[in-house]
Image 1 (tube, protein in one colour):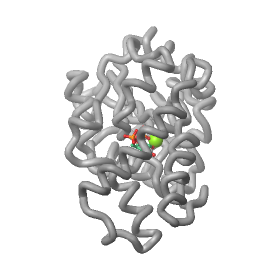
Image 2 (cartoon, rainbow, N blue to C red):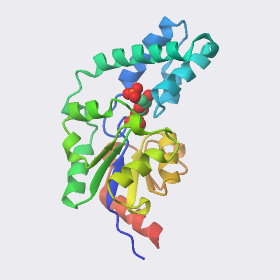
Image 3 (cartoon, rainbow, N blue to C red):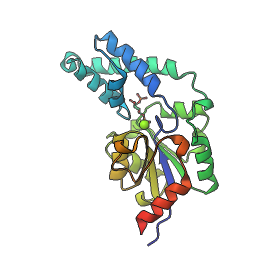
Image 4 (cartoon, rainbow, N blue to C red):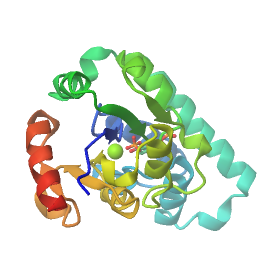
Length: 225
Ligand code: B16
Ligand code: MG
């Protein structure tokens, strides 16, 4: 049976916009408050990882995992988030990554549905600030998801909301945990970044500026035959 490509499900951070710098600054401030060193290199390990899992990784780095109760950990995560929210206040539509607006309007013209599968609990707010929230047919709120990436739950939930089957969807991600999530959902995975980092992706673009629906379609159709 010939399958049609009916939906594209985007990751937010690193694909639509780059909030990674703000996450970095807010986690760094918290880590240093706790006496834990925090580097850009270590920050890479937090991409696509949920807020609480990120905190656990930071505490483990400082050997402080056992030093806080669950309630105290919630407070620390909340402190980081309040700082993050002050940093993202100035996000505007000009913070949409290169090529993304054009890619979205191409998808719209072709009648392809748009979904968002972000691990961020602030995704709605960021999409609002970027001025593109209303162009999306489904946004999965990370608060409704039990298991984070690399579990497939978030991409499957987005597909369900869009009323499409997994093999009619492509997912776009910049983190390897996210690509794993897409593949485990049974979808076609497009990665953004260096090819060697994404051996499991079906197609890799070096940056969002390279995103091309024509190229995606070509490989997607080849994979069907
Ligand atoms: P929040 P994505 C992820 O977004 C970020 O990459 C990751 O660094 C962040 O910790 C996570 O969201 C949770 O964000 O604290 O705002 O809920 O890449 O899945 O769009
Ligand atoms: Mg991401």
